Length: 263
Image: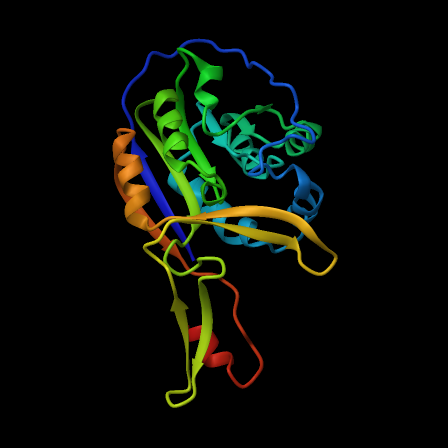
């Protein structure tokens, strides 16, 4: 499941802008960068029937409400998949990502109406001094950034009054890496979700390839929902919508298919 948050923001004057390109991160990229797993991630996003394409992107686009000729910023844009959808609907979009390898992959797609730049999600507003956008997104990324509050503060700086900020993240209550899991109650013949350490904020290293390359890691940062709301309020946002999406995938075989789907 995913939590979707939509927000209103304060006004800023809109002016023309140019992008300041940073030097690409190399061997000294921040540990939260996905440079080291860019090849794997790019391959995954090219697959058919991904959760992003079937569930996440359509709903995020609906909530964003893309307007033709309006400008958007996609924070932690990866290899540009979501930005491509925004551009296809007529929006102009700038994608920001700290992983230079992913930004280069996005640029090679040559998406009309989209620009991409290497930048830190925690301080990207410095690239757009005096500039405002009509909307912003951060899709399945904020849980991989160590300072969510800084991301929200930067988004507030570049968004126009009453514009929308759509955030999609792994459910902070039920999808905590290493601290949540499925169990099965034999007496009730029911699958259930076990959750540990929900209220404790912590960093969790994730092995991208546990079998073939265990040294390749990304990082997840767990925070309770109250921490996200507190950081958003501090940045001046007001929450006006929250949606929790259930996966569209189903178990169609096996003795526990019915209880798995119910869970």
